[in-house]
Amino acid sequence: MGDERRLLSGRVAMITGASSGIGAAAARLFADEGAAVVLMARRKERLAALVESIRHAGGRAAAVAGDVTVPGDVGRAVATAVDTFGRLDAAFNNAGYATAGVPLHEVDAEAYERTMDVNVRGVWNCLYHQIPAMLDSGRGGAVVNTSSVAGLKATGASAAYVAAKHAVIGLTRAAAHDYGQRGIRVNALVVGATRTEMMDDVIAQRPELEEVFLADSVQRRMSRPDEVAQAAAWLCSDRSSFVTGAAMAVDGGSTAV
Image 1 (cartoon, rainbow, N blue to C red):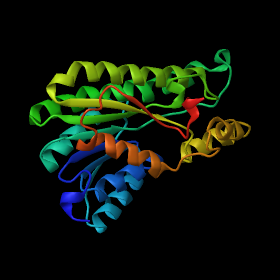
Image 2 (cartoon, rainbow, N blue to C red; image 1 turned 45 degrees about the vertical axis):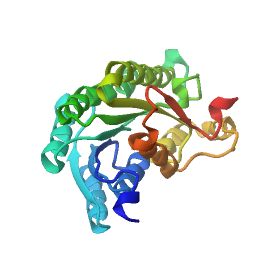
Image 3 (spheres, rainbow, N blue to C red; image 1 turned 60 degrees about the vertical axis):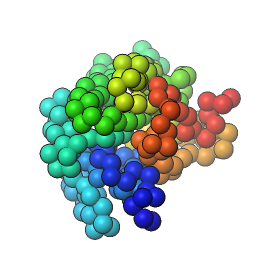
């Protein structure tokens, strides 16, 4: 495909949670669509292998091993985008942590703190560092945050996860309001059950949840990671130029019924 026809041609994008699942699928897709990608996750070896694969295919990529709950790690990733590729145009804040569905009073404090830290503080840290870089470039930008159907309704997930994903949508809408007149669009993906390693871990803990997740979709299936990545790429592109503050469902119809 010629560069002029690529969805993200010439863009510089940061993707968190990039070592597996939706994040890894987005890394490959964004690079295929012309973006230089800065990939962040905790698993250094996986990131390095993914970067090598993207470069081997002719793409541009850099890796920053780090944790989104650590502000300095997020700052390093943003700085890497600016120092290596000249600026930051787009971000897909996808890192997440899920806990299996148990009653609220059975969620221990450690699980609650980890769930809120990764899913909420992680998105906050990303927005806090990414937005100044986008403002400094003078070109504006686009940010996509990964929420969930649990961000709109109670699901088979824990109460902590439901609360965290509701908060992601709140942060998204607040940021869209704050920066709408300064050229930065901020949207969220309301993601349904997706076949990822994290989903496999949840089902391993609570096997009965697999049927719950399948029944929740009117398509009676889980999504593939690349299907979610396609939605994120569109929201990061100029083709969604009048879309901001949205919580866009990529859920197989789960929130339609």
